[in-house]
Image (cartoon, helix red, strand yellow):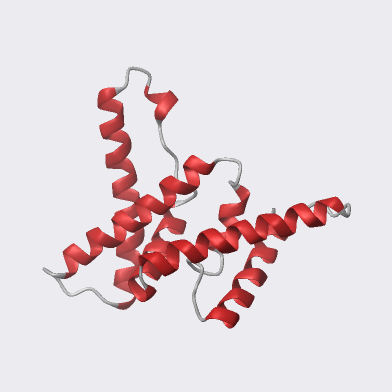
Length: 149
C-alpha cells in the first residue's frame, strides 16, 4: 500500500505542475485509489467534503475562520457530518450495519473540502476523480507487466 501512496503523490505532483490544479491534495488520489473497488465510499467522501465546505462557509459568515483553523474545521465538519448522516440513516433502517456509510477518511474529506475552498468544487472534485482514475490505470498497466503494488 505504501507504494501506491508514493505513486499517488508523484502523479498528483505531476498533475499539479502541469495544470496548476490540486487534485484534492497530493495524498488524496493515492488514498482514494486504495478504495477504487468501493465507488459508493469514494462518492460519499466527495459529497461529505462538499457539504463540509458549505458548512464551514456558512460558519465563516458568523465567525472569523482562516488558515489552519479553517483546515481543522473542515476535518471536524467532515467528521460531524459523517456521524449525523449515519445517525439519520439509522433512524430509517432496521439493520443499520447494512447501510452504514463509510468515508475514505475524515482527513481525506477535510483535505478535499479545504481544496474546494481554495480552488472551487468543480476543479477540485473533477481533478480528484481524474487523477484517481489515471492512477488506477497506471496500477493496472504496471500489473500487466508483473509489477504488484
